[in-house]
Each structure stands twice: as C-alpha cells, then as structure tokens.
Length: 341
Ligand code: ZN
Image 1 (cartoon, rainbow, N blue to C red):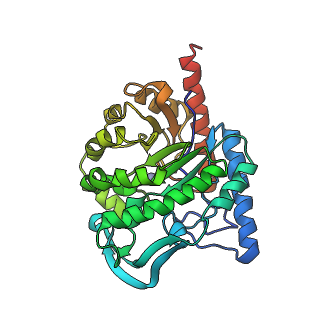
Image 2 (tube, rainbow, N blue to C red):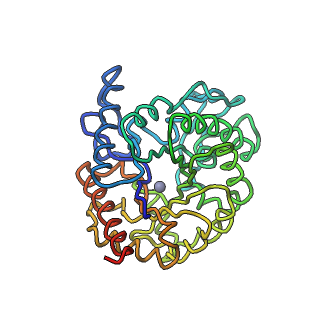
Image 3 (spheres, rainbow, N blue to C red):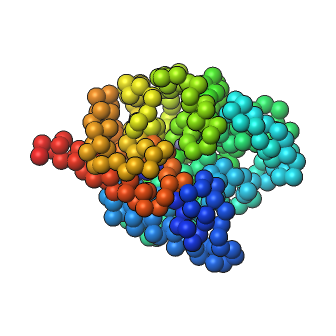
C-alpha cells in the first residue's frame, strides 16, 4: 500500500550537464557522454532505492528535453522550417519545428535505456513519454491540417514505443500532458482518445501526468493569472475517470488545486504529489505524511501512490536526494499509521 514513485526527472550530475537548469547542455560528448548518462542513471536508481521509492525511474538522465528527446527520433519533421507558435494557448511564443510529411518512428527511442534500467533494479520500473497533445503543442503542422489528426499520428508512434518499453520489462508507462489543463475542451474531444491510442494493447500499468508547469517565468506569470483556486482539473477529471488509463499524477503539495477535486477520480490510482518541486526547502517526512493524510480524505489509501508534484530536474542534486528520502520516509509513517502502530 502507498507505493511511492516520482513524476520522472531528476537532476543531472554536474559532470554530465550544467546543474540547476531545466534543459541543460551536456558537458560530455561522444562515447563519454553515453557512458556518463548510464552512470548517472545508476546513481539515481540507487538513490531512489535507498530512499524507499517503490517504483523507480532512470531520472530521465538520457534526455535533455521531454518532448524533443522523442521528436529527434521521428521522421516527417523539418527541423529547419521554423514556425512561430504561441505555446500553451499563447503563454509563450517560440520558433518550433514543422511537421511536413507523414510521421513515422525512425527506430527505438528509449528501448536501450529501459533495458539498462531494468537490468539494474528489481523494483517496479516506470518510464515517461510525452503525451500526444503536449507534443502537438510544441510543433507546427503543415501536413495533417487538423491538430487532432496530427495527435493521432503521434499517438500511433507513442504506442509503438510503449509496446517496446513494456517488452523491455517496464511496469508503468506515464504520458506527460501539461497541456491538459490548458485545452480542456480538446482533452474531452480528442486528448483522451489520443492517449487511448497510445496505450492500445498494453498490459502494464499506464498513467497520465498533468501539471501546471514549473520553473520558467511564463509559467509563474500564468499561474498568477489563475486566481486563488485552480479548478481547471474539475473540467477534465470526470472524463479522465472514465478513461482506460490506470493512474493520474498531479500536484498536491503547496498547490492551489482544491484537494477535494481528486475525489472525482474514484476509479483511478492517484499519484499524490507530496513533494513541492518549486521549492528548494526539503520537506520533513511528517509534512509528506500530512499531504498523504489529507489526500486520504478523498481517495482510499489503496488507490494512493505518493509521488512528487512534477519532475525534479532543475533542483540542486542534494535537495533532490533529500526530497526522495522525505517522500520515502513520509509514506512509511503513513503505512505504520494505517497498520495501527
Ligand atoms: Zn509536471
């Protein structure tokens, strides 16, 4: 009960990439870089295990960007043809690459990484992939004509990748969809259908991670505009609750999301974010336990998986280790409490 996991990413060691940056440039190259990524993944698997995390990740040590890391392995994209696009409904404008032909996977994206991680842990293993809607919000379309159609094409490629990850022994595949609380109508119209395409035929556990974004100023400004209570989830949770995904991951620590909203996910395992990734202050185990306890008012303990609010990539390494330990220890407090001791 209360199986712990993390949203996905962890900081890169400073010898591998610039520390405390979101999409930090690598500090190694060639074979040294490839070996460095494996070494860093090993460190984090060990740190997670020692902290008592039940379902571990490779900390996303092999990729620089959670969307582009996937897109680099996709044919049909013209990286030279930049299109100006307002990301997340215009929250920030950037030059993005353009889809100019039918999309296909050039080959495996994360297969070898999953095999490596699987060979080095007996714990549950989780892998993250970008969700179709979030991918489509990061790239321009000059081929499909409709965003929903392009999303379905990406979902097909994600499904190929997910089946491969499952075959490598991954226990839980999570799709990151920070775009889900921006385009609430699209979520209901085609966002969940695209995720269903992405998980088609999988027997392993599947999850979607939704969040309000962290780190960059444009996200902080947007959050300021949302008012004192963030109720966007209220619009999409009923549809997510009826979806075929097994788990939903969201922020609950220091969040302006009313906790009662997770009560709308009565058919799902809820990954309760009990670690604030926007703060460098390490939670105490008791604070983590208090967040889990509060979530238990709305979700049965059997359906709670204590987690981080979001990825920890931009945090200092020692802070991330401290937060892993607090998460493991906080869940243990609650397990003992539930056992009556
Ligand atoms: Zn997130």
